[in-house]
Length: 124
Image 1 (tube, rainbow, N blue to C red):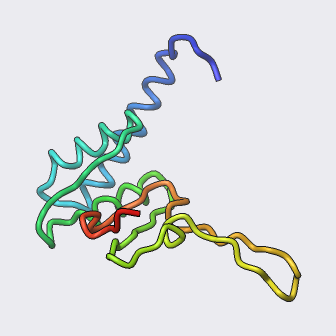
Image 2: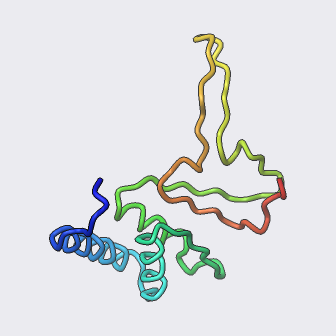
Image 3: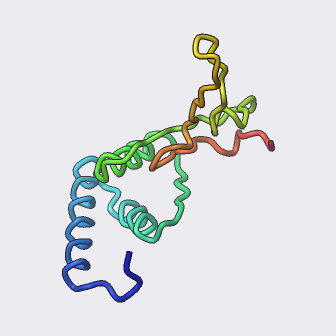
């Protein structure tokens, strides 16, 4: 990985890829142009996004469309008061047949994570 200034060709390629992602998302989500632009800006910047709104606005569909557009893995966590940390991160489980521990990765091991109703999450 170089630490210098990117070449014009690599900038053009990144712009073309972003335009293709934007077009794919616009095909899946109608009437949410500003939201798509803000989500893409956060994606390019490597940030996080908090999507708030009433049910039916397409928040889940937006994240799913972005994950499909980038070819990434999407996971969704429905937060509930009884949610345990291992429900998010995963856990080690003993496999008696192999006499070894198997790691079960939780939904947090993905490219895009939708944490739904985080206000219901326990304090732990």
